[in-house]
Amino acid sequence: MYTLKKSLGQHFLRDENIARKIVEALREQPFTRLLEVGPGAGALTKYLIAIEDIDFRAVELDDEKIRYLLATWPALEGKIIHASILDIESPWKEPFTVIGNFPYNISSQILFKMLDWRQHLQTMVGMFQKEVAQRVAAREGNKTYGVLSVLIQAFFTVENLFEVHEQCFNPPPKVKSAVIRLTPCSAPALRDEKSFFLLVKTAFNQRRKTLRNAIRPLFDEATLKDAFFDKRAEQLSVTDFANLTWKMR
Image (cartoon, rainbow, N blue to C red; front, side, top):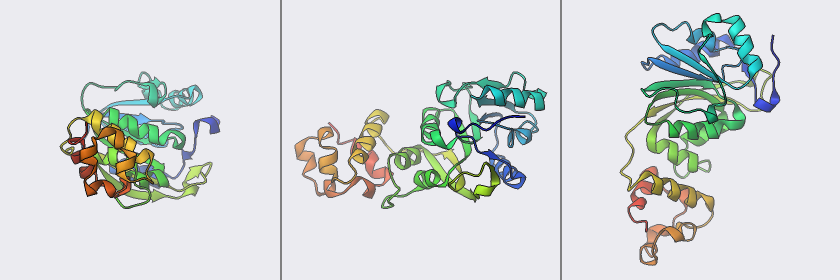
């Protein structure tokens, strides 16, 4: 048996129909290497290890859950990385896919990790707090549109697949959940990624201000006179941000 640890944000999926639905969504795209993040009690793992002809690995921080997983599914021997997803390097040098019922307390950090791995990431199918899933998929003009929305959408197509009720988990979380899929897309034309990331983060750091005031240090005064800078960060599309990188100092 095992215990649930609130400190690790553990809410284990117990609804078999939802588990199968997540795996079905995963299998809509081909893959040969699969990393499961936070297998916990194995709700998804038991289906994933049955997939033939793939290189499967799982990353799990909780040593108690690792012991449980190995005792229940001996085939996992040698396939579990005992660490936090936030601390590991890319598990393969070749393209791979990621799946997980992600811990809600580090969900934004996990998404930024996917950005770090974007050169090799083929697909990510994951369960997040519904609010985070909405933020990732939000378009300009939406109040939830922000740094995460722009950076993820610049490099990935975001699909909101389905919602998951609180009672599908043990213990039930206090928030609703949603499963999303990220698939790499062609990035907009950027001057360079460093400038793009800096611009987006600076713009949303003071999102109530006009662009002219929020990102003033990044542009010369002549450029800032353009009426475009009367807008606020949430009014700009991903392409707008990309185009602005070419005008930065």
